[in-house]
Amino acid sequence: MPAPTTEAGQKVTKKTKDGRMVFEHNGQTIYEWEQSLDECNIYISPPPWVTKHLLDVKIEHTTLSVGLKDGSPPFLSEATGGAVKVVESFWTLSDGELNINLQKMRKGERWLCALGGAHGQKLDPITDETEKKKLMLERFQEEHPGFDFSG
Image 1: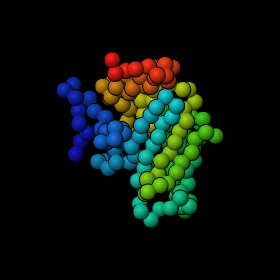
Image 2: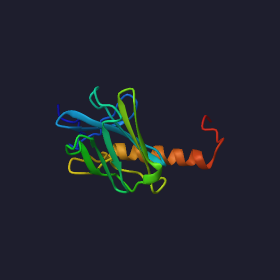
Image 3: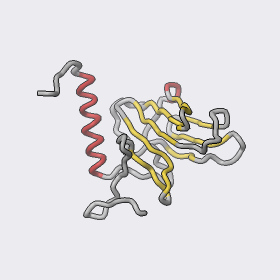
């Protein structure tokens, strides 16, 4: 099933019920992702038999590689959506979900994609504007703690 499009024919970024953006290739979800002022989180559902000891995850300044330690080529090997603080970034495998936490080098930078390699999909203009507003609100709340938005 092709990705949804706007009236102008632009692809619309798919989202999960949790608000995560979805990256698909050939109709299959490859990963989901979300971002905040400080970080970008990528979520991958590996096969059930994959354990943390089998995974080979390499987080670098501008690239991410995810594969198995069996010598085969990585499943993902892509440029990141922005520069990463490598020593502060990490990954975990919990409840069958691989979470890769990339700490942004430049706080508040809005990434148009989590990974922008050969098959990378950028946010559509409407989703990009929504993300921009979300990050601006997050920054405002951080700079003005206790501000009452209920008014």
